[in-house]
Structures are given as C-alpha cells and as structure tokens.
Length: 84
Image (cartoon, rainbow, N blue to C red):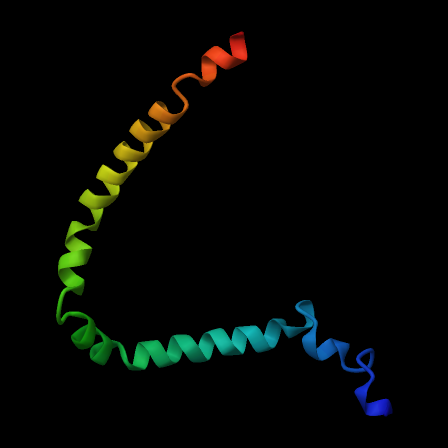
C-alpha cells in the first residue's frame, strides 16, 4: 500500500504550494461573477433585499449605541470591585 503514503502526496494538500491553483480558482470565480453580473443585478434587486440594504446603516448605528449602553449597565459596578 505504498500509494496510500501521505508523505508522498503531502504537496497536494500543502497550503503554500497551492498558490497558483488558488489564484486560478479566484480568477475563475471572479470571471463567473463578472459574466453573470447582469443576471445577479436583476435577481438581487427584487424583493426585500434593497430595502434591507437601505436600512442597514441605521440599524447598525442603533445597535452600536445599544451595545455600549448594555455594556455600561453590565459593567457598572466593575470599577468598584477593582478599587475595593
């Protein structure tokens, strides 16, 4: 069972030796997305997705404020424990 030896086939799974193959894979995906850009633009402009995109900045901003308020409430007495 010499053909099952992983030492001989290690280069096929080595992250650093797959650079050219990864570049080819990225190029193929990019080319596929570029070729289907009109279809994707039409498909993604239908339904609730554009409305979600329009509201995302306001939702993110509100979330950040609520996170900081929540952290302030949770760790309100943390300063007292460190000092005492």
